[in-house]
Length: 156
Image (tube, rainbow, N blue to C red; front, side, top):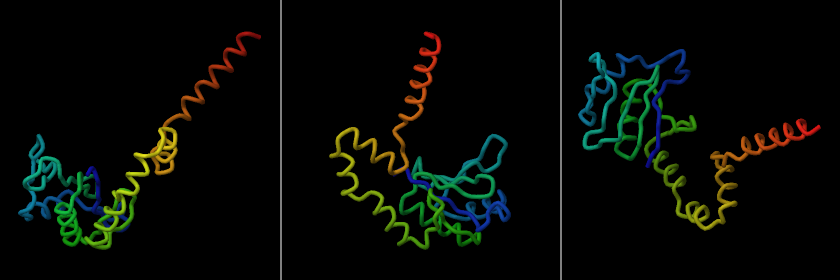
């Protein structure tokens, strides 16, 4: 799964998680392997045994990439240590591990995947647009209208 989750404090812009707090929290977690950047600062922490599942600090909040059950558990531990909460990609708070599991399961239900797979191509585009992944036709149509207007103007 290519899910992301975030750890942040309420009103994180006014009460950010500092890089030092992040470093102190991840350095003591045996589940994470900290990788340093060019200048010796912590760049990110990989979940041990994984090449993709990572936690990184980003200007006041933490970002978990390729979240699975193991990594979300670590994110909940980090949130607890930092006095923060775990958020979804859509900025909704996960109350606990069970809440995360429920939402992930709902997101990847076979019924939804079957509806998307069994629908004709045009309907799939409409369904994708409905779910926030627009097909991208609007800019193309706008360009064609503009081109037609220029041709009409040139012919006059």
